[in-house]
Image (cartoon, rainbow, N blue to C red; front, side, top):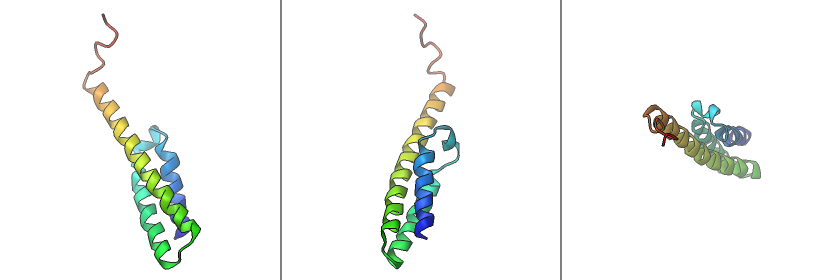
Length: 88
């Protein structure tokens, strides 16, 4: 379980930095990684489980921030905020 948590944490961290990849909510992978890593830490504490937990937490936060920023940009473009941008 520790390896699965680590892999999911890495995926949410790396995928969260790619705005196009955030069309799929990668923060869900981070949350699943947090769950798996904390279960693995309770059963058998190891550095791998701790690393998976830390990466999953950081990846979840980073993916959520990127997802919200992309949603706000798309909403601003769709709302016509930039219609008169550049016209004096």
